[in-house]
Amino acid sequence: ENIEIVFTINSKKVYIDGVEQELDVSTEVTNGRTYVPLRFIAETFGLTVNWDDENGTIDIEDQTDIEDEPEIEDESVIEE
Image 1 (spheres, helix red, strand yellow):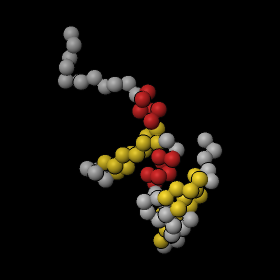
Image 2: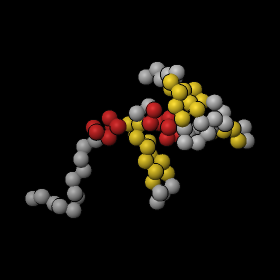
Image 3: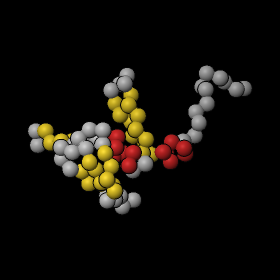
């Protein structure tokens, strides 16, 4: 979608297509790896982010994919 995201290390400032915004947490470099807020990036691209506490996983979905999924009927009800 030609969106430009510019982070500054150790700063809560971020620029989306040249417009300044503020993050909840700063970006950082730890042990040679750069960490940026995943939720912020995903939501900037219009994705939905859900945390599954039970499994300790993150689920990222495209909202259009969610809307296009067919509804699952209750399998416990058997029609004859």
